[in-house]
Amino acid sequence: MRKFYILPLLLLLVACGPKDGIHTLHLLTTNDVHGAWFDSTYVGGKTKLSLMSVNTYIDSIRLAEGRDNVLLIDAGDCLQGDNASYYYNYVDTKTEHLFSRLVSYMHYDAITVGNHDIEAGHPVYDRVRKELRSHGIPFLAGNAIRNDNGKPYFQVYKTFKRAGLKVLLLGYTNPRNATWVDEKIYEGMHFIDLLPLVQEDVDRYTAKEKPDVVIVSVHSATGDGEGGSNEAEGLDLYNSLKGVDAVVCSHDHRQVTMCNGSRALINTGNRAKYLGHGVIKVNVENKKVVAREVSSELIKIDKRKVDSAMRDAFRADFETVKKFSTREIGALAMELRTRDAYAGMCDYLNLLHTIQLKSSGADISFAAPLTYNGKVKAGVLIYNDLFTVYPYENQLFMLKLSGKEIKGYLEESYDKWLAEPDDEHVLRIRKHDDPRNNQSGWSFVNRPYNFDSAAGIVYTVDIDKPKGERVEISSLADGSAFDMAAEYKVAMTSYRANGGGGLLIKGAGIPASELEGRTIGKYEEIREFVYRFINEYGLIDQRTISDPKLIGFWEFVPEQEASRRIKADLELLF
Image (cartoon, rainbow, N blue to C red; front, side, top):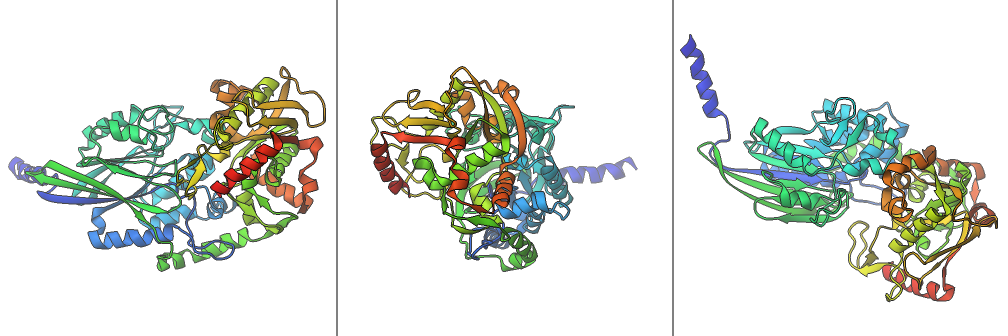
């Protein structure tokens, strides 16, 4: 009897491990899709890039190479950025989330948690995690750690059988999550840095699972490989990890692929523009891997090549979101253009400042253009317009800041915004394509959503002076004196209040550990305040949003020179 049982066991041991020969695994990746799920806009019916076109390419590769030879993953930021994601995050919370149904339809193997997925809040990402699990799809974030027991809040890894190989996939979110949102958004957990955690996990789970291929997916920017920022560690991991065949990164919306023959790095950019394609060839002899070859590419997506069956399968969802998006909510007497914010005071930012000041009762408001080049036409306003006016799910916060800290904050903001005095340009721009916003030719060096201006005070910004000397504050909006030593109530986004963009930390000089103690008010999402404001007034005109006794006044000086030169810079940008 003992021999009878030993023989099958020996046969099993011989059979385990990959078969001899060349095994080819096709790794397909997406990231930062930001709700680009439907192939048509809700207004005007224009064709746009979406997962419905991406799926055409995925299906063709599966057909050509064999479904068992393909692994499909996403590197995060799935649950924010479009009317559809907003609708299924916060409006229809009973139906299975559209994202869960979409990725199940497309047969994704795993999803990594992005910072904007965390930003959606516990009710959303906990629900999606459960739904994905029911489809056999893990929601990965090995560096999101529970406070109560020190274990990961999300799944760390999963193994797959693909191309006759055992594949180990590990996933991680951005460790900077805690600096971008209110603590209640990620209540019960904290985030740890990717270095050295990822290598430790690779070693631990490789020893446990004994895979033939190891892939790491991180919601972290590509970075420069110099280890200077824990927000951008893609290249740091690519350069340093041992025992890994591919690193998938994301977050910065850059299209990047590179390969040294034995390891690939893939970042597809954002909003379904590209599909990442890594090819991992493994040579097996005598049940052992003796050689491997890795290559990678980005496949440009054609928005016209839509998976019609997928479109039909989700047509009812599209019509539901379209109906929600096109309902009338008010009227606008003038056009709002976000690009006007780069040149000074404008109707778009006056609207945001007015809403923040009136909604919070703050003395001063900080706000920035959140859509790079958005436009809302005069006339009837529909709910869809709110996603141009305010695209993010940021809350409104109020903090205590001294007059000195307010000035330092603004100096830091305008330094991101303006070039040095001896530069030929006033705006800090460069001749360089920017894939983050499809800008070809000239683009800003820094991200415009960090270009905060202030309301509630009267001040000037001198383009001929260096950082630290540009901003001169003359008074509060009501004409009373502005005191550098006095404390003021300042309204801003939750992203900014938690240290996002560095304006509070670098500019105002407030340590990150002290920001929570400075917070004296936490309110609803700013988009909801915008919606209420429009409903209250019905017609939004310049008188409604430009009361100088509320928002004050600011301008670039010398006025004529600044106006002329900034206009020239904007012509290069746009």
